[in-house]
Image (cartoon, rainbow, N blue to C red; front, side, top):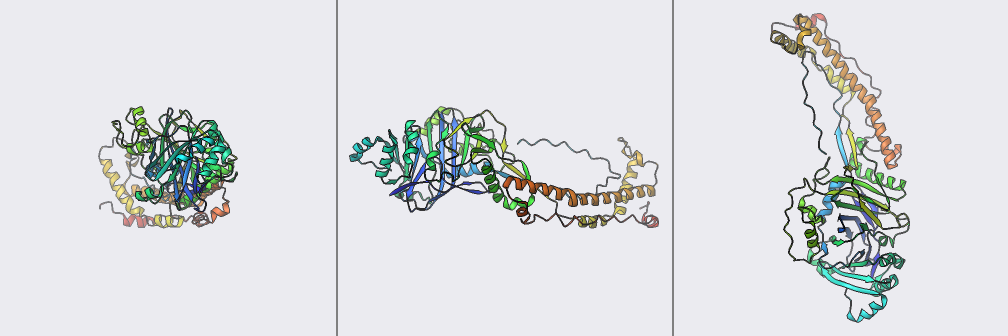
Length: 548
């Protein structure tokens, strides 16, 4: 007996976290002992006007015998309106829009900023960086009619046997499903009734094991639907049939549109806290950090909101977690307006396989595409999301991303800086600089920079240079001391507090992470050693040769 059931699901983040969850836009059917689970519930939703292309991917693991999927649809999906989607599209969209960690590095605080005798260097101004075969026997027709169920269409699409149903009563549809070998979850009739009342159809796809074996794939490939509907929505409620009313479920939606950001019209849409600095030692644990961050934020919102994780023009990114999708990849995702003639392109997506396609001149590469991507992450329960998820396309085109920053400390110490400065030869450096100053004094000095050195002999210039060099060495050590003993520990403490607030972790737990205390104690008690004073006057005199 085929069993309609809700499955474990999760949200896949490229190079990030995997979040435990359950089902999404429909309910799933499989044998009761199949123990199937889903690691990645993801939907690509392409929308322009009333035209929609919907792709669904679930990375199932486990036996596929008698597995089936049931989804409410606005119309009967004809052969040609349902296609096999490319799994790579999901991977690319995920990688491109994943929450990301940007890394920067501190400069060495131990600097010998010794400018004596050197004219200022004009630095260029930095430019801103642009950022289902259900076989119905003829002898069952009368029974189907009595139940108010009509088999509108049935066909095989590669590894899927597909049936499209309509119904006039939810009890009749539930009975039909049971009589056709499906063990329907408790409450199915009540869950199906709103869709029947709206005149919606039911798409049923189950695995044809013989055909599936021919494909060479070990997992089910995504399905893609093209249809027209005034409603911009995803049916979530059927996916909650088997779930406890308070059991959170997860869904990632990649919405591709022309005009602007997509948000929910019947639930609050909020942006995750982002663009914050995290401690440097979270880099190897960023998957755990983001998972905890999302868990914490979703709990704070009581699983009642839709989170925006990314919104960006598909022509570029800053920083890029992955390259923008090419025109072909966007086309495979379901985008039908590239290169113009959107109506013909959309009709081609709904035409049976082998139908002639319109000639389209796709723009090359990923740049300059008239496509914007909104990535939404929904964590919900049957109690907190009692309605299906409705969307609206806004005019907002302000790029935004869930981005976090780590600033890698400069890995040194005050002691290392003192040693480095002690090895700096002020006498030797100054001999070279004095010679350069005297040469420039003999030439034309249009800038007037060297006027302060005029009228001084070599010894006086050498003494002034050495004194400036010595002061610069002391300033370098003091700067290192301020960095390692004050600013760096204070910054790390602030970043730890931010991490605690975002994730809900305690500071004690954070301090147990590798390298969490690396820069908080080692240099805090280390005294600043004075720079070795210049040599005596006779050592400077006898070591200095103005005639060399």
